[in-house]
Length: 337
Ligand code: ADP
Ligand code: MN
Ligand code: MN
Ligand code: MN
Image (tube, rainbow, N blue to C red; front, side, top):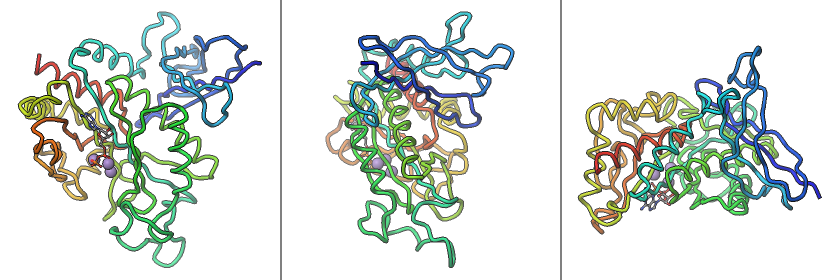
């Protein structure tokens, strides 16, 4: 019987791209190949020359449709040359991944996000003072007062597992209606593929609940936590010794690198990296053991074991994981070469 392939790609919307998808019916036994779309509707091409190419890079079972149906993540190419489209950040990431493969980089990315319904975060009151009680009881909370949207989170986690994604955990976050899932450990290119696929599943499943899942970095101004994408990273050397841990922190904090990384860590990082709410101010760089107010945290256990990984706390929830993984791999591995 014919089956369905959901072709997924990242568009050209600014400042934060959106995920797009459409369905292709394939004959039994056929594999998903090159396809195209109207780039003039996604800010990826002018109307006079609108065709863009979808080139499959990662396929997994479709846990929403089930059966033989699949999800197909694509990179976008230019039709004339079949070169990467300017919005294609995966190609450069893949090149860096290949260049530094011998370092065996591993990533774990903590995707925070916020559910919205009827114009406000899920679970927030629509009367009185319109704000819930201040932050405190919500992080990893249990109970109807502390939690909003757990049914969606559970459905999303099940879907990620059925799709074979490298999801490693979930938790409720500090702001009511805010959640997190983690993808990893996974390699430089794999973490990006799985992160984008997990985002697709999140939006798609929340859609069925009539809820919008937002990766806005500072969805509510004021005394409410922003949403980040803490990025945990190690190389083989870092997993074997502490000198490589310190060298990685120093490489990322080197002159010029701080600004270069921040520019690739997601739109509006200035609003989130204020120095409050478990962040370091974007204008400073510091690393420290157990320090959740630092740019890079060395987990307590890592200092104890004298090996392991580091956590770059600066990437925004709305970052492009291909860009973040490329920057960290390139900076740390080139300095250790
Ligand atoms: P936090 O304590 O900051 O909330 P989490 O448990 O949410 O941390 O996320 C930690 C992430 O780090 C997980 O995705 C995990 O897979 C990943 N991780 C664990 N060990 C390593 C390692 N050696 N290299 C890279 N990532 C790792
Ligand atoms: Mn976490
Ligand atoms: Mn978190
Ligand atoms: Mn973290």
